[in-house]
Image (cartoon, rainbow, N blue to C red; front, top):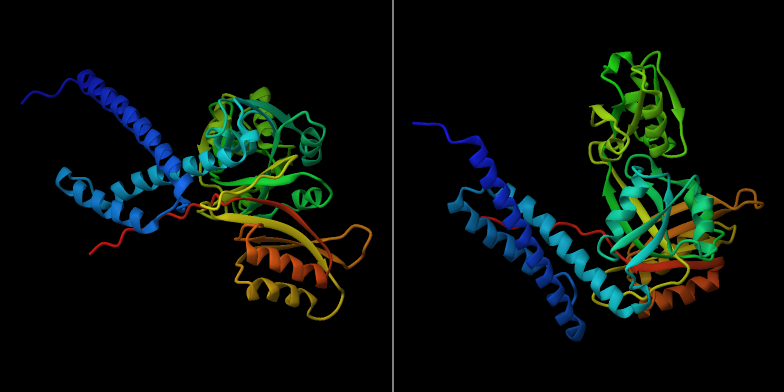
Amino acid sequence: MSSPDLNEVRLQISQTDSDLLKLLAQRRALSIEVAKSKLASSKPIRDTSREQQLLVELIEQGKPLELDSHYVTQVFHSVIEDSVLLQQAYLQQHINPETIANKVRVAFLGQQGSYSHLAAHKYFARRAEEVIEHGCKNFKEIIAKVENGLADYALLPIENTSSGGINEVYDVLQHTSLHIIGELSVPVEHCLLVATDTTEEKIRTIYSHFQPIAQCSDYLGMLSDVTVERTDATSHAFEVVANMKRDDVAAIGNAEGGRLYGLTPIRTGLANQAQNFSRFIVIARKPVDVAEQIPAKTTFIMSVKQRPGALVDALLILKQNNINMCKLESRPIPGNPWEEMFYVDVECNVKSSNMQLAMEQLQDITTFIKVLGCYPSDDIKPTEPELD
């Protein structure tokens, strides 16, 4: 039996991939039609029972094609997530027509290749045709770009599943008039990247931003005779290592960003946690309305009276109004020793009746309260099929 011609097989694979792309584009177009139908009916974007039924049917259809259930589920989790986010973006632009634009100016930390740069393009891929980039050296510069009208939006990393909340971002949010209008979570894959043909044993200096350094502390703690240098952003670390072209220096960051600078990963999976995600927030000069078909989050800050149980009393108001709190972070108030400002994320639309009542009740027992933004929740939890 003769072996198949490799070039011919590769041509068939390329044609199959091209056909898949056309089908995915067709499915995306149908997702928008679904979103249009939900404008009039006010039905929620997500129908998890429908998703579950769909996954079960697809798994059954895949069996005679020798496609295992894990493969089918994994593929369609991505397809369903994309469909949900696409429909959410469509509904949001429908009720906030002023946000529709072919070009958007976005400020973010670092330059091309930084995690913030990649996250900015991921978020606006569904919302604009072109992103005009404004790379910045620090969070204050990012905020200033939007406040002064030099950028339309800013993207800020707010927390990481490994290293926790980013205090500098919480602090700048406390003093700005800007509003949170969106969020996204992105998986983080830290790699050791080099510019020459070298080995891990030769590395004596590692460059990176302080967040990846903190998130890879277990790995870095095992190294001996290695100096760790902090940079303004991972993209700056890539630039430094690329320019030095030495076999004893490396950067920690993502492989996709490193490739823009000609760097190659020699070790992957450096983070302390195998599942490592960073959450970003999107801010703008004006707030947005969130369509009632979309799950919403509201972020607000508050300070409470200095008496026993004051914070508990405030949180009980959320419970009594059936509002789920998904994050609570405290930061010191400058100039007020031992007093704290609390940052609160809740899963609720700020315009809902229970949230409005909760805010009224909180006004009575807090010394300060301010809503930073209400925005669509980007946390698309995958639906798991129930199989016999």
